[in-house]
Structures are given as structure tokens and as C-alpha cells.
Length: 278
Image 1 (cartoon, rainbow, N blue to C red):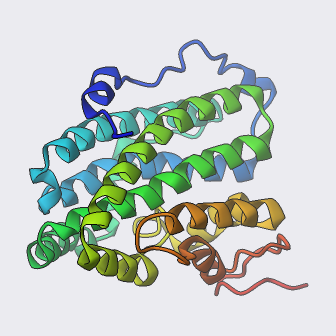
Image 2 (spheres, rainbow, N blue to C red; image 1 turned 90 degrees about the horizontal axis):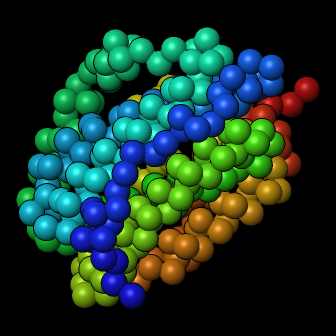
């Protein structure tokens, strides 16, 4: 069934958390590890506006359905960041906009060059770039849903679990759009399949890798995706991507975890990505 972009736009809304008892965390605080991961998630959600900025230089913004989706997507992701920030604030961790801005400025030339690179790639590739964008987005949103679900499972806090369930529900709608678009565009073009497969296998990295410190990336994915259950979740994500036309056999998630030193035995990765030993 085709994705109904008009219905998506009409039903897009700010995620709510006003009805949740956030004071619950004053007596039942989350672990330091989980707070670090939630801070990472919040920063990534707030950075969505920069991803949108980059994509506005590409052929994607000329597609009516895609531009409509990106507008709603950017709005929803902002409120995800706000919701996570509310949880953090109860734990005396303030997500300050000046700090977010400072983090972006630290990226320096990389941040300023990103929209240029995206624009040049889009001009060189043409309309097939949109298939890459949609497939890339599918991978990112699949991983976001999995991350929120894993966080809820690991922390086992009822209030946090409900908030993450609401966020994951919206992220699942994002997945549906990206997958629908990716499948349709990949089926129409062998060139798009080859280009997408190449870029996913050679360039794709876990969400947040381009903006966060490597130690934070290793920590977060070590917490969420280590151990047998984490690796099963990663394998399922790879299967989802493999189901797209021309992507059979890709294991981008498991490959990324290997590169970060995230292991099925739950051993913590060391600073260089290898497994720490006693």
C-alpha cells in the first residue's frame, strides 16, 4: 500500500508528555549510563534541522511528497528532542541551546561543507540521489525505532518506557515513508540500486556519528546493541535493509557495530574500538 503523505501531514502532531509524571524520576532516577544515552539521543534529534538544511540543496527538495515529509519530519524530531530534554532536566541535566550551537560550531568546516557535498552529489547523480536519500533515511529511522525500544527494555522504567513508546510510534511512521519511497525508486532504476548499495556499504555510519564524539558513539551503541539481544536487534535491522531492491545481503548495522568494537558477549569497547580486557 502506498504511503499517504496527505494523511501523514494532516495527522502530524507535537508529541505530548505533559500527562506523564516526570516527578517520578526524583524518587526513581535513571542510571548515569542511560542519562548519557538519552542526552546523545536528544542532541541527535535537535540536529535534525541541520540534516534538513543539507538535503535542501539536493534533488530531494524538488519532490512534492519528499519536501512535505521533510517539513513534518523536522517538526516532529524537534519535539522528540524537547521531550527527552524534559526527562534530562528532572535529573539536573540541562540541554542548553547555546551548548548545542557550540557543538555544531566545533564541527567547523565539516558542518559548513556538508550541504555543499550533498548538493554536488545530487547534481552529479541526478534524480537517483532521491533513492539514496530515502534508503539512507530508512536505515536511520529503523535504527531510531530499535534504539528507543532497546532503551525502554534496558531501563525498565514505566514513565520512560511510555515516553519512548510514543517517540518510537512517530519514528515508525517515518520508517514507513522512507521504505515506501526507497522501494519504489529502487525498483525503477538499477543505477539507483548500485549507487545506494555502494554508499550504504562504504559510507553509512550509525546515527550521530557525524556530529558526536567517537567515545560517545561507542558508549551509546555499546549500551544499546551489545550482548546477544542487542546483536539480534542489529541483525533484524540488516534484514530490513536487505529487503529493499538491490540491497540483499547488506549487513551495515553489524559491520558498524564491529567497527565500534560492540560485541555480542557484552564486553565494553576500548578507546580504539577493540574489546577491553582485564
